[in-house]
Image (cartoon, rainbow, N blue to C red; front, side, top):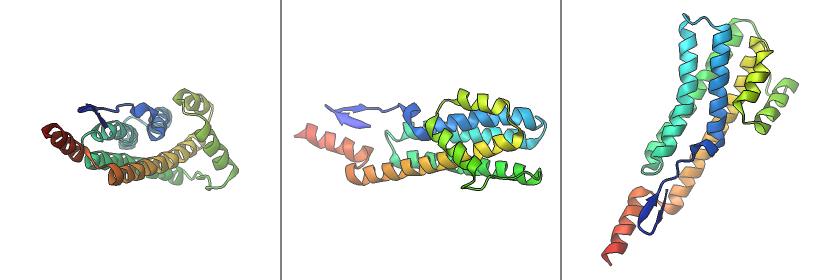
Length: 183
C-alpha cells in the first residue's frame, strides 16, 4: 500500500510473489499426488490437500491484509509457512512409512529438482513431470518445492518487517494524511 494524493493505493498483485507461485505448484502437485497414491477415505488425503491449500490461501489473504495491517499480514504469512511445514512433515512421513528414500539435500536428484524449481513456475510443467514418476519421486519433488516456498515466505516476511521499520504502517500513514489535511 502507498499513499498518493490522500488516496490509498492497494497492491493486490500477490500472483507475482514467488512464494505464492511455489505455493500454487505445491497445491497442484499435492492434489495430484493424493489422488494417485492415497485413498480418498484416508484422513491423510484431506489433511495434505488442506495443508497445501492453506499454504496458498494464507499468502493471498496475508498479502491483502498487508494493505491495512502489517501485523495481520505477517501472521497470515506465518500460518502459510506453518501449513507448508505441516505438509513437509506429511511427505517425509509418507516416505518413511513406505520405506522410501528421502533425497539428501545435496544429492544429484535434489540438486536437479532445486534447479528446475528455480527455473520454472508453471504448475503444468511440474504436473507433466509427475505424470510419469513414481510416488517416491513426486514426494521428493514436493519436498524440494516446499523448502523453497518456506525460504521465500521467510524472506518476504523479513522484507515486510524491514519496510515497516523504515516507512511505518497504515495508521501512521493515515495520521500523516490527517495532519497534512488539517494544515
